[in-house]
Image: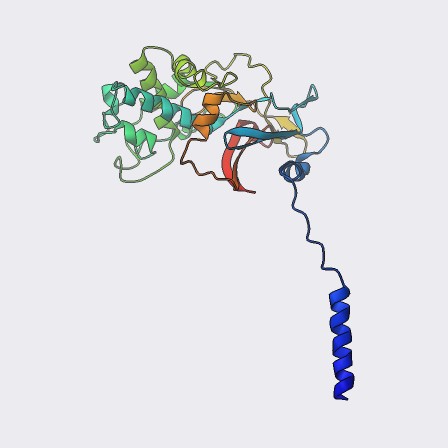
Length: 306
């Protein structure tokens, strides 16, 4: 019996040894992985998005899906321009820091040193409070909403300014809390304009976008201006069909930047992927712009593992 069991054991071991090991599933290539993620948005006649993957300062792939303009059946591609909404704030902050580096302002300066029209509300609001969303100021969109403005109304910095200067109280003492506040960045754009002596959009083009090779990027400060190849924005209606969602913003600072997925110049690549940034051989940056479900005012940039 022992010998028989030993023979059976040897036979089983021999059978297992003869069977080839299961083939491990091959991971998707970066392009296949992006295409698989985008496939869920590939509905006919639907808005979509563009994605660029940048690693080591180089654009390694650009993929897109869907339409930039439903009425004219215009597909999204690597040259489509997207409204970037609050991603614009990083450029506003960069403009402020450029002026600080030149010694033309300090982050500890009182906001009212530059914009005395802002009412004194019992506390000193400093530039760094605006940058870090700790000013306590009321958000401009809440102020406009309380005044009866609708989302699709044409809004300019002049309209926002009227709401800002009529505030009568703060939400909290500056520096004591953090509360996301678009108002602060509208004020920062005005401060950049007053200190530099030129329109905010022009300053950013000269000092940021052109040196960085971002030739298709601009601050859209005229709600009626034509931006070639810009994607429209859409929202689902109650019936499930797509409806246009007008981005009627002529505001800058808190939003207003539009740019496309084309490759940035060498300076732009180095700025976006500077030494010490959160990136390594196994990490890449994914930049995506989209047109639909109100994603037309959305651009995300985030590091992802491959």
